[in-house]
Length: 406
Ligand code: CTP
Image (cartoon, rainbow, N blue to C red; front, side, top):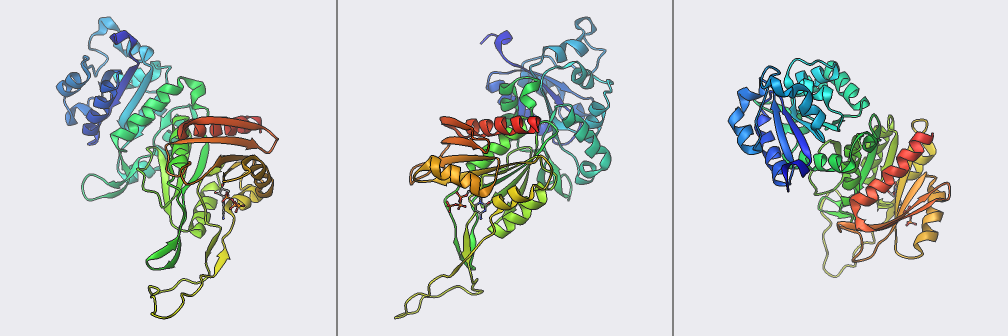
């Protein structure tokens, strides 16, 4: 591929210790056929030097507006970009970007860019939680930038908490999706908060056993990743999944249906949309044995008595925790898929119901999916067999349509 045919990415690097992780992001971007121009801030160069960025990108590296002035880099680099990604984005860089400052090449580039912009913040928890940073992030998101939620974990020094730069592979995935969706209309969930439940609940019988189901969580995670790429703030309530946290989503781990209900209802208080992709157990054991249930020679096992779990989808649909909130359910059916789906949509009272056919070899754990999205207005959108992300985008298309109409 000729250089001019490659998508042009500007990788802005600001001065945090996580700057070294941006080398891995840069490598992934170049190896997957992107032409990457690195624009480090002066402080970033104290962490990782110019020769590293130049060698890994194969492009010259400029930091200040006074270098190569004849090429007017402070205007050209931003104008020509198809995507700007700032990783790590420090509290200072977020503040300068939010306020439209133009005191170095990176902030000039951010002002001249008309392409999608992704920020991957990394800083200490206190700095991330400070109202000044929170307001700057909200401003950037309102303008359509994708601001990835930082990951939780070990920070520099002895601290642990929210503020880690997400895994470079996950940031790369966000970039890939944002690039694929193109400019402004692609970020149609900007400024919105969406809540997604994923995975399958486990209802404990005793300390070692549970009643569970075969949901992997992949569809919910695909919904989370696509919503991040469309600019949403995402809360992902994850029940017993073994998947890496999607960059940009606030992940709330839960175990049982009761815990899932609590986490979803709390997050839904200020949500524009709630998508219940989790397989929630309808019943739980009536009794939890404190000690492991033992088999006794010559004795029949005791039957397991069950009680009903709350129906979170029906409760959300009835409560509408916020005016105009869109509520989406999923239905897994083995027979009479459409008829059962319609009946379930009416029974649960949600706005949209994604119906898919399940069986031993279908849907559970698979990368691909086939479904029909039913609307309370009678609409019916078939989604052909394909990646779970394609179905996720169809769901968000319908959600955006309803949010914009409402
Ligand atoms: N759901 C829920 N709370 C429950 C059970 C299910 O919120 N206690 C949600 C699921 O997240 C999903 C939708 O309801 O979005 C459909 O779940 P499904 O298990 O297919 O429906 P059921 O209510 O169990 O209906 P049936 O038993 O007739 O299949």
